[in-house]
Length: 228
Image (cartoon, rainbow, N blue to C red):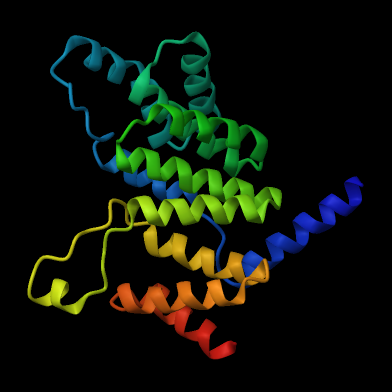
């Protein structure tokens, strides 16, 4: 049974590597960090400032690429119950990403879920955690669960319309995260792998319609459509 599971996971990884879809959650984490450690709505309050400071050592270690030490620091804060709410969501997100990079996918899944549960409506943190959770599910071979997560992801965070009138004559709504086209491309491959060829085709066409100005994903979608 274990050998069969390892073989299945190997085949899944080979599939995603072949199509250039290895999920680099680290990019998302970088976005969160560079974004100013994101959206402290009550940053003037002493409690919010204290929460920020509690994560300071972990951020410093992460910037220094001392990931083992950063993971230990974030996990210590989580286990001690020092961090709450959005700060807890961030600590869990960073720790989950490090676990993911270490191929501890079960640990990553638990931490990404904790981040989702505490991120509230802060889109950049919540979207990064959902994206990470989907990535970990892929690595575990749970493609159906990954597809459902990414479908919900696109529905929640994808705001662009693809309407040329919106784009050139009005102000087209912006996605709440830059990861939407990436999530859609992964959906193309997931649907295709799961045998839902029409769904895969529809999502690929939607990528071209909405993200035709993003050649990285539009070109992949065009190649996929040409191959079916």
